[in-house]
Length: 219
Image: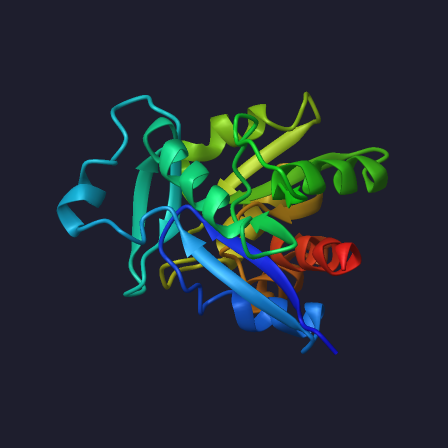
């Protein structure tokens, strides 16, 4: 049987060894990942120049060495587009492994955008109450709230790329009225989900698992 080839495109560096094992389980052994990162070909100095200016839309991702990096959205977009173009030459479909908004990325083959998938899933299940968002950085709260199309949202921050307290921000979301929680970054893991669920008793949606299941359906 010929293996399916699915592109995984990160705004950081590949490979995403923190992510692919969990996604592989959901996609099956017959799937091969074609990984590429917007920062793969850059030096440390070049990556440093992608840092956001004050007030600029900020994304965060993982480097190959395990460190996290803050990136200005406008600076990383052209680099990401280049990697999309490369991966489409090999993969039958691809996934942007970031829950940020990328409406300007063009593609010729199926390309999954996690932010769109998450929005449709949440709208289907959130009939009343408030959406709780766990986001990587405190400065991202407002920009990520705005992408949720006027849904009632409360937000708290906890980075998936650093050791830290997940129980406190999870409980903060519940105290502020959240009735369902979305871990709004592809960097969050199944273990993070378990911690948040145990701390709150609320339904918790993990971005990477939802996206992997949709990618599996594309075949």
